[in-house]
Length: 178
Image 1 (cartoon, rainbow, N blue to C red):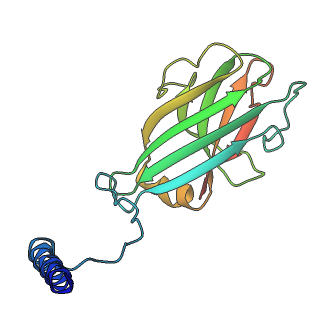
Image 2: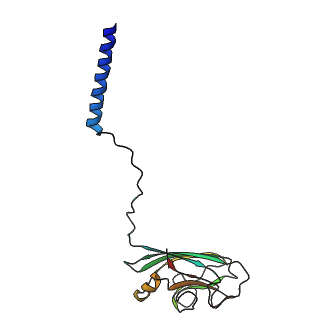
Image 3: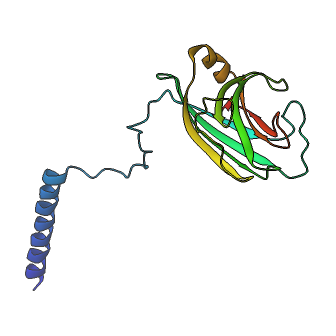
């Protein structure tokens, strides 16, 4: 009986060696687990620049007459290969409907000239008329003229939104790289 148990043990050990050899030949040696790797972007160029703006009444020059709590935020993605700026600006709580929105060339704390109308006047506006109501969002694309690219990338452009009560601008946000 003892010999039989020894033979069974040898047979089982032999089978385990054969199975391990087969597994190594089919799948290779087992590897330790690897930490998950982040996905690599395949459709986005690595040189895109992300910019943001927080729109407030306190940044507007001259100071607006506002009795409501107004907020706004913008996200901008600039592609230097094409000078294309994709943007979304959202706002809530204006004193009335937006009558115009613009990109301006100007440093923080200073009024600057309109370089592109987003909605409203003066034409041509990227989006046509502004959305109705005192809340909304503006989404579009602008091809930034080459001379304005350095100002954009250095925080020298801003976006603002105008209303009937505040024709010179109700909220404003400097556009800055993240």
